[in-house]
Length: 140
Ligand code: FES
Image (tube, rainbow, N blue to C red):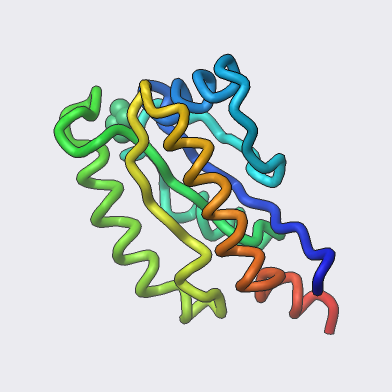
């Protein structure tokens, strides 16, 4: 388990977190290569099925990250996302996944340093959880 490298799918809002990721890159900040970014226009469009599909198809963790509350470009998309993610976290054990595999964060466009920090923290957290329960079932 020591050489386990988690795969993390991150649904990131085009206006904030994706821009922060871009800033982290142009600022030459390093963050783990384990994170695969999926750019969406708003966290409010992240259907819970996207999260479940990612986990069922081998992601060890999923991040949804967007604009801070009050800054959503579509008024209230991030509030909808917050409600959905809370419900989804409560349901994840029903699908056999630890709720800690899903995380919601707000990272603003100018927060390149925060983006790199959160990615590092997330990878460490998921590494401690070990491989996804879906992967473990595939092995059996
Ligand atoms: S536009 Fe960024 S979360 Fe809605």
